[in-house]
Length: 125
Image 1 (cartoon, rainbow, N blue to C red):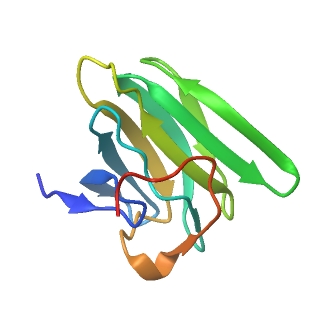
Image 2 (image 1 turned 60 degrees about the vertical axis):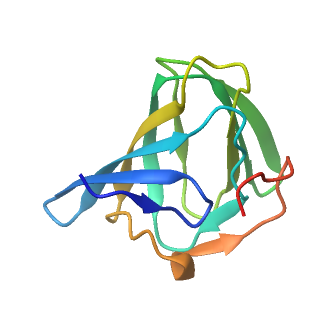
């Protein structure tokens, strides 16, 4: 399985592209890691599903802003243009792992992601 780094700094394990329409990927953060805040120019992360670890997801869309607790079984989405940032708990037993479905397929390029003002200071540069 290939391993790449997302524009926000998270480790990504891209999985199969689904009929050219969408893709599946596993995102991972080590305990205590905080991503950079970004928004997508072309990709929607239709579904996040936490499989391991714990942490928080911050997202802002227009005037609406929220922070969601991430634990195994939590599902969330990141619509196109939504600013977001996530972090893994420091005291976790292992990394925070999230399986995500994206449409169109996740490109993993810096040009697709736009820097945003986030909720927390990133630890990943």
